[in-house]
Length: 85
Image (cartoon, rainbow, N blue to C red):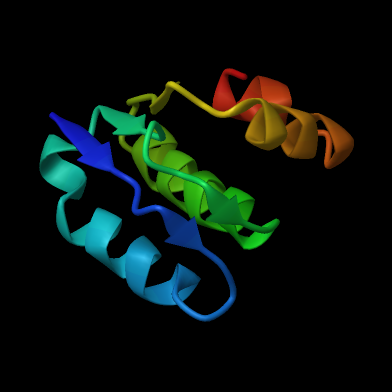
């Protein structure tokens, strides 16, 4: 099952997005980022939180259709490899 990130993930809604993903953790295999347009570094916090939870269960998270800006941001923060970007 793929979890669809909303168009916007910023400080204002990141905690809710993170909670929504955690509620669907049992079926969470991948995160579809195709709708993501407006975001800041908090999106990395959300993705890393999900990755950490899944990793503790011996599972991995696939980040799909990541926009170039997200890839650059992950690279700047040094978490590209953790997120498979």
